[in-house]
Structure formats: structure tokens, C-alpha cells
Image (cartoon, rainbow, N blue to C red; front, side, top):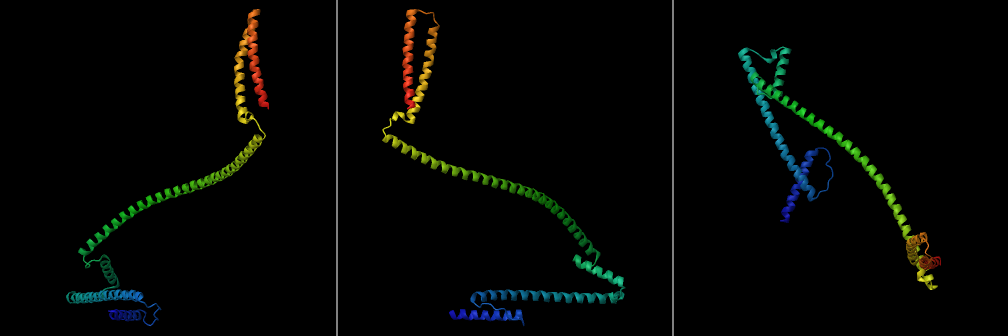
Length: 283
């Protein structure tokens, strides 16, 4: 089995070498790497080339045969003309020869079987129909081309607008990115400061606690006392108005004296409490 494969490979190499020598002739054959793959590819190409050469040879032989038949038919027709009317193309004038050549060329161009009027008229009609169809197709292509040009213009305008919008968006994004970076830096700075203040407050609280500071004097306690002070001041307003109303009454020495004393005591109590709170806040 291996021997048969080796013999087949050698046979293919020999066929490839013979084909390359035939192709390049007296010219040197280009160097190539001889291996099973390249041999298989070149052998396949040689087979395709051989089949193509055979087909071309058959077409050439067929054309030669047809040319020979046409020559025989032409000679027969020429002899027939000479026998019947003693006419030969050689006896024509130059103008007649030109007309005859033009007639033959027209028949070849129109692909008619002969130069009779019955053959020319359908051929010309077909050619005219083809011309009209071609013109109609050209008009359709022009309309389609105009539409494409219009769409292309709109697309180019849209592309330009999109590019401008993209530039604006990139510029805006760059600006916003710079703002975000700045805010992040500020945030980091504020975080650091906040941590620094927190540590400072904690250290101050520890120092004050170590020194025996009363918790009632802390910031929160003072804020609460300030709110209470404001509330007490608000409560004294109606009492003062009430006292003023008493002062406007006709004096009844005994009753007025009692009311005045009660109001004074109540006002003194509130003022004393207020003074105490203020003194504590000032500490």
C-alpha cells in the first residue's frame, strides 16, 4: 500500500515537471518547495490546464470547420452567380465593394442569418427595442442616482451635524470631568479637614473631661439653655402686658398693692431664673 502511494506521488511529480517544462518552455522554471502539498496543488492545476487546452482545441477545430464550410458556401454562391448572371464581386466598382462590405458588416453586427430584407427588418426592430429599453433603464438609473445623491447630501449634512454635536459633547464632557475632579479634590480636602476637626474636638473633649468640666457647659447644653432662655423671654411678654394693664386701672390702694406685689414677685422670679441662665451661658 505504501509502495503504491509512493509510486503515485512520483508519477504526479513527473507529470508536474513535464507540465511546467511545457508552460515555461526555454525559460527557467521558478524554484519551489517540493512536498506532497505543493505537488498535489500543481498536479491539480496541470489537470485543469489540460482540460482547458482540450476545450480550447475543440473550439478552434469547430471554428476552423465552420470557416471552411462558410468558404465553401461562399465559393458555391460565387460560382452560381458567375454561371447564372456572369456576376463576380471582383467586377464591382469601389463604391459597390464598399456597399457590399457595409452590408456584410451590418449582417454580422445584427447577427442575421443572411443579408435579405426579411432578416434585416426584425433585427433592426429588435435593436430599436433594445435601444428604447436601454434608454428607459438609463432614465431609471438617473432617477435612482438623483435620489442617492440627495440622500448622500442629507447624510453628509447629518454627519457634519453629528460631528459638531460630538465635539460639543466631548468639550462639555471634558469641562464636567474637570469639575468633577475639582469637586473630588475638594471633597478629599473637606474629608481630611473634617477628620482633623473631629480629632481636635475629641482631643479637646478629653482635655476638658480630664480637667473636670461640667457637662452642662458643653456646646449642646448651652444651645439648649439658649433655647430655654428665648422661651422664658417669650413667656414674660404677656406678663409684662398684664402688669401694664394693671397700672392703667384706677388705683385701689389695697387691691392694687396686692396685685402689684404678686406681679413683682412673679417677675422677680422669672428675672432671677433668667439671670442665672445668662450667667451660666457666660461661663
